[in-house]
Image (cartoon, rainbow, N blue to C red; front, side, top):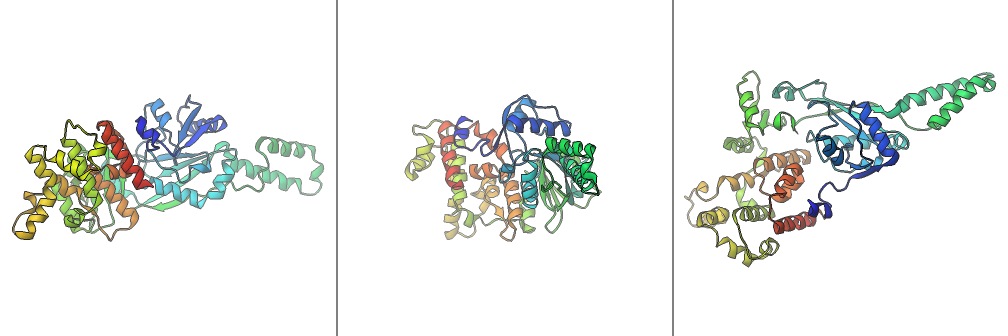
Length: 412
C-alpha cells in the first residue's frame, strides 16, 4: 500500500487528531460505550472513523451499535468534505454533508472545546432478516454533546437571568456560581450549542448488512439484490413479501434492471468509451503472465498492447477482442449472434446507469455494477474502495503504477 499512500489514494485526505482532540475523541467513545484508544495520534474521516483505531481494535465498524444503527463523531469542522472511508450505507456521505450543511456555525462553536456524538437511527433496534431493510423509510439523526455543553449553557443562562433580577447582583453565592461556570465552560451566552434532531428520507440504498444488500425502491417494483449467496437462498424461501429478489451474479438480473429502466445496455456506445478501454486492459493484465516490458509501457502503447495480446492463447484473444469483432462482423452479417462474440464479463461490465437517473441514484447503480463485474479499476476505486484495496494487493507492481496514474489523472 506504500505507493497508494504516497499518491494520497490510501487513507488520505483525513483529519489528523492528537493532543486535546484525541482526549475528546476518547470521551466520545466512552459516551458510545466503546473502549478508549491508546493511540495519541491518528486520523479520522467525515464520520469520525479512524483507520488506525480500526486496526487497533480489529473492528472496521467499531463506532456502530450493530448493523441497524450507526454512529459518528464530530470533533472538528474540518471533517466536512472529507470522505467516508468505511460506510455502512450508500447514503452515509450524503447524510454527513446534510448534518454539516444544516449546522455549520453550531458545529464550529461546539468543537471549539467540545465534540458531538451523532446517532443515526432507523427506528429499528436490530436486523433479524433482510426484509427488515424494506422498512427503511425515514432516518432520524440525533446529537449528544460532550460534557452536555448545551445543558451547561442553559444552566449558565439561568444564573445570568437570576443575577439580573432585583438586587441579586450583590448575592455572593450567585457570584460564585457564575464565576465557577465561566471558569469551567467559558462564556456560553452567545454560542450556538443546540442541534435539533434531523429527519432524512431514504429510498433506494446499499447496506453492508447481511453480507451486502442493494434495496431498489425507486423503480417499477421493489428489488433486493444480495451479495451473499447463502443469505439470498434463505431469503428466496420467504414468499410473504412483495419484492423481487436476485443474487448479484444472476444473469437474469441484467435483463430485469434494463426493463425497469435502471440500467442501459447500449454495448455499441459503451465499446467506444474510455471505460471499455480500461476494462479490456484490466482483463489483459489478468490473462497475461510474463512480459518483457512493464505494464506502464504496454498499456499506454497501441503497438505494444497489440503485440502482447497476439501472444496470448487464441481463445483469450477472442474474449478480449470479442466486442470489436462482433460490431465489425455485424456490419456485414446482421444474423450473427451477440453471445457468440461478447462474453458474459463484457456484457455485464459494459452496462451503465440509465440516463434518466438522478446523480444519487446513478452513483448507487454504478456501485451495484462494479459489485457485479469488478473489472474497471477506476470505478472500483471510486465506488468500492474496500474491494479495490483488496484487489490491488494481487496486481503486478507496474500495473499498480499504471492504475495509480490513471486514478490521479481522472481525479484531477
